[in-house]
Length: 347
Image (cartoon, rainbow, N blue to C red; front, side, top):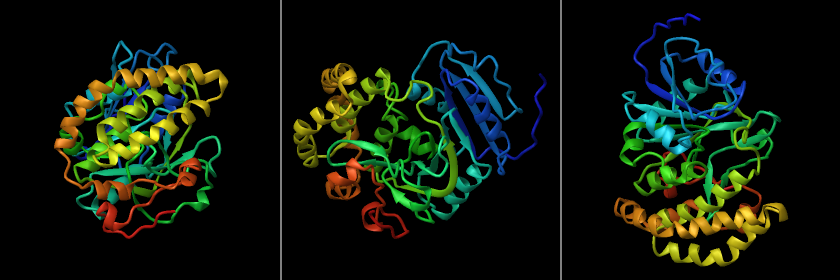
C-alpha cells in the first residue's frame, strides 16, 4: 500500500512505540496517533520479534511513521534506547502500543512544555480503556517502603485535579522526556528489561534536579498488561526483581538505610499479596534481585555521583503513609519539594 505523505514542519518530538504481541491494538494506537491535532511529529515503532502477526499486518499511515523489526525481544528498556539513539527532535515521547491517544494528546504535551519552561519530564493522564470513567494512572509514585505505583489507579476520573500537577515521575506508557536529559541520564536501564524502568529513570532524573509535570488534559486510554498478561509470571518476576534494583541504585543515603531496613517487612508482604499461585515466582524475582544487587550497587556509585538534590528533598517527594501506599494514592508535590512553579497538594 502506498503511504500518504504529510507535509509538516520539522518534528518537535519523536514518538517511540515498542510492540510485542499486542495484536490489533497496535494498529489502533497508530491510527489514533496519525490524526493528532498537532501533526509535527515523527514516530518509530520497534517490534520486539512479535509472533502474533501484529507487525506484519501493520499499515503505516504516512511518511512520519517508521517500523523497525528487532528480530529479537530486546525488552522495553533497550528497544526505547535503540529508537532514541539517533533522535534529533528536542523531545522524546514513549507510548505503549495498547494506549489510544486522545486527538489533542501531543498538542497538550507541547503546550505544557511552553507553560513550564525548564521542566524536562511530563506525564499523561491515563484512563482505563476498559472503564473510561476510571483512572489507569496519574503519574508514578514512590514510597519510603521501596514500592512504586501509578497514582490514583482505579479512582474515578472525577477525583482528579482540574489542572497540571507536579509528581515524582511520568509513567512511560505515555510520557514525554527532553531528549538531551534522557540521553544524558543514559535512557532506560537495559538490565531491567521491562517494568519499573520508568520509575528508575524518573528517579535518576529527579536526583539530577529535574522535575515532572503531570498534564491533566493530555489524555490516553490505556488497556494495560496486554503483552505480558495481568499478574502474569513474567510481570511478577520482573516487578519483584526490579523493585530491589530501583531502591539500591537511587535512594540516597542516609534515607537508604531506612528504606532498606523496612524491606524486612515489605518483601514478605509483597510476596504474600500475590496469592499462593504466585508465591514461588515472586520469591524467584526477589532472589534474582538479591543476586543482582552487586551490579546495581556499582551503578549506584555513578547515579549518586551525579546527584544535585539533597536527601531531604527526595524524602519530601516520597509517600510515607502506609495507608496511602496501600490504596495507591497520588502524590502531588509542592513547589518546595519539586521546585515546580505551581503550588500543589499531597492527597
